[in-house]
Length: 304
Image (cartoon, rainbow, N blue to C red; front, side):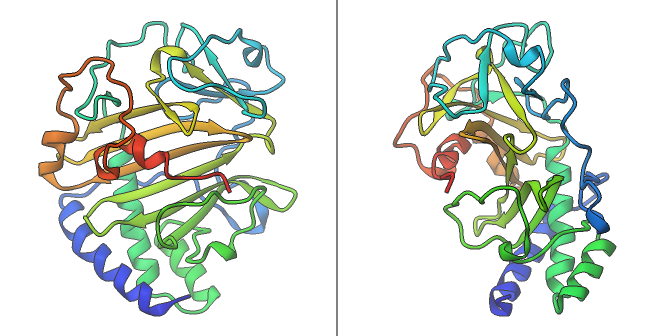
């Protein structure tokens, strides 16, 4: 590991988290790897499993749900090889009535209720800070990660065995990497990479190998509000009770599902990110700055 970079990352994390974590942030999601090849999180092989994202449902490819008739999305197109289906109401996540979400200031994302992602991600970065601060041998990193509540976390992408090839990101190497999902042929089917940004935001990028688990993603047509390099997807924003803003995006490209979660702990960010848009159904502006919309950020990720 590059210890110089670790020192910089640790300082960045400590400064940002000292403000973001005041008052406690609840419990961290316990979905990480244990020793001996046990499942890192509950296996998503149930035909009724739900990805925790509005308008998205992950189902067994052999299930009846996977044969739901498709409809044309308002943005993007499901192409050959994409393990996704765009379906009509009822909502893909199982809801019978979709709320009339308002659009955020980026004229793309829907404003939705916050569901705990902010607390979970900031708590994860607090744990990462502990692991990075005591980084040493592989054994020491492993022990520190377990003590910090993130068993299986590593500090180098090359230390992770996956069922798939990681996507390319626009960021420097991640501060930490956490494999999860289930083991298939010696590799984990899911992986999260974590990035603290210099502007104070925190990013988690999640990949899920749908082909390895024989799954398909159902996307509700009513929730699709953008395309990600031509593939239909969903962008949402929310604000928690501490004023932290959460931007999230979900899409499927080929055999994998992708999600980006961006938490901005700066109070002033909520004022413009979640402000109601004055433009109705404006679509996704191609020239919007990366910091303006998680959708634009998502377009900068490539599958290989």
